[in-house]
Image (cartoon, rainbow, N blue to C red):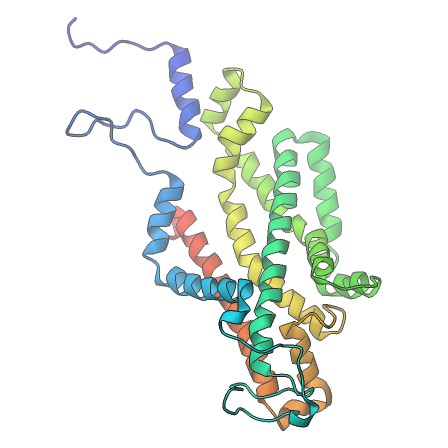
Length: 320
């Protein structure tokens, strides 16, 4: 009969179903010009929502500025942060020294600017390490299940039972040199279980979808199913968790430095400067030595948390 559509075999239907899970809508209704209308993917739809979210715009501008001064602090700070003059100890703000001087006679403005590099480096590197390690372990456990899933569950229970600040006090106290990479390593070692548990649950949910079962029926191997079908659809919760955790890791580094087990001089850290301002209650006579590094730390952590909230709202349709 003329105009009757041909009936596709089961293989063609399953191929289309499997390809749908890989990030693209097929079989969309034709547009006015006879070409198939292309639907937006989850990521393009999320980006469309983010651009219209003022919280994301404000947080993104703050983070972009922090990244810029982290890479090139000399753009807005021309002095040496380690050049100090004891004769100007605790001097207030003056021309050319907007934030005054600390107890050692160092320019507070310059140290605040250079401290951004340490905080951003720790936050970004620790978050990347936690996301990669947690996603790898949690994804494999959720995909294969069985003994690997049970082993990961018990291992994460052990790590969840360790308070992260107490663990930092013990771990970093035993290290001889406490550099940025030492702190990053500690955060990765104790931070991966949260991401692993989220990645595991996300993979278990995605692998039960029809397009994954269709790919398996067509003979797709484990590696192809993980990379092509499961990973693109299971990574969103991990991205949201990692984005919010980035601000937490920055505050954790400042907390450990404040307690005296974090970064050591000559590394510049907002937490270390806050700790130095608290010793002997010096900030009572010169509040600027505490106010400016604390404000910089608060704004940075708040910006990353705001960014994480915006990303969560964009990737979760239920929250729109």
